[in-house]
Length: 287
Image (cartoon, rainbow, N blue to C red; front, side, top):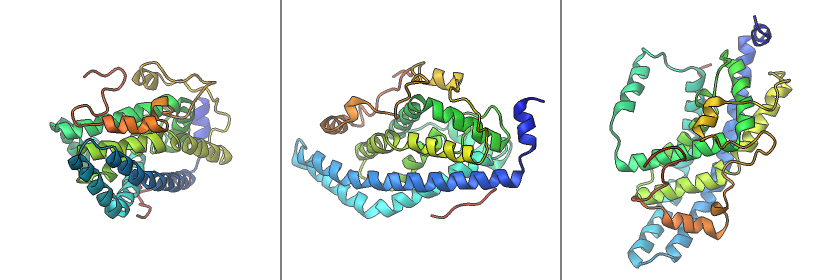
């Protein structure tokens, strides 16, 4: 029996569930506040794009999108929160591979997707990779601590209840009510990338790690946590252990250059392929 197994033998499952619920609540509060601040900026971004539009038709589209997002903002925030919680709960208690839910998920993966959905999924993939690259240390330690609570010593980001995929997919689903077209959706996703992925995910991971350390969950875990799969996913460009930067602090996303990047987003161009790739309502139960 290794040290991990000996340590976990003293962990009561009820206590583990309490800590998981506390992490879920902290993630919900942190990210819902971040999304609220980010949605405040959508109106300004669309207005500036409208002011710089090349013709009246495009300008009208941006103004229509502004009105739609204002009307649907509460719905978007509600969907984000409920999807975030559902994603957390699903990661904590995934459906068995042979269950109806598991089979349905497998079938959905085989379905052909349209161009618009491909662009949206590509935007999410880029954000996931940005978090994995920019939050290597904190996410690695959080993987270990969440794995400790879940009884999965080998748990990694894709199975982490607060992993990058869960956080980015929640906002993608929140954009579903928007009917102003793919370009507007990609602009909103880009703003989530810039203001939430770049500024709020790393602080969240640090907060959760500090909380779990305070609760004696692997308090002596070393800060340097290698992750072969994550490094490979990020094309081997993950930040060094002594120089971790906030996810996505790219110069092209700062100030006026952000709007230049937003103007370039279009169905034909979209986000572009990521490196190495060609061409959270109420708190749910469950544990």
